[in-house]
Length: 250
Image 1: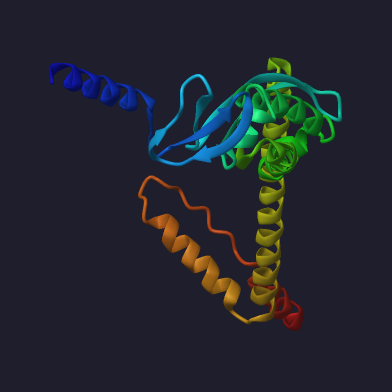
Image 2: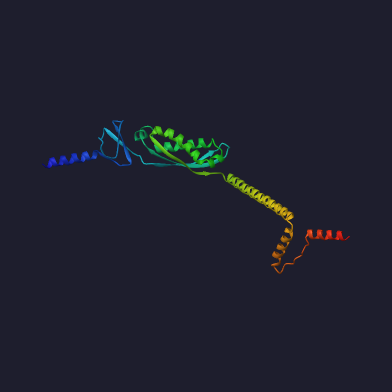
């Protein structure tokens, strides 16, 4: 009886040692005598030792940080650019059998693709069309990654580092553009003001007595401050009237 219990416990422990647990975010790639056999989903599964071997693959979304790369744009400007790629494994069998190290392969593919794409655009296009360039990198990386059982979800350009001399040049260019706009706005204001003054002068000349009223209004505004000295100028119209009277008398 004790021997039977011992054997029962031994076989129970042996069977439990054959069980392999796969979590919800994992998939199991099973090899039987070196050959790929099948995939296992989440749960407990029996994997026969010696004859079978299982490799667990994490199928959660991963972020690959692409380090800063030295790039040369189409207009021969040197810069540094970094990016991040988000991908997840959709076929665990291909991810293990088709490529040795998925993470390293995606990183290297992204680096070479990023250098090639940025070499086909100018610096202005690189700075203003970051989303479009990221989409081009995504399409090329996804085309190759699909064969490895991957789904590349997005590519984001993190940082574009320009040489210090180029930064100073761009700052001077931006300042020149701001000064140009300020001059244009100022000149447009002067043109509008001169047009309004011309219209006002024409209206005063055509309206009898308007110039007298304007003169009296100006004197009233000036006389509000007692420290001002007013020199009253006789309007030209009055002088002409006096001149006409004098001519009649002669």
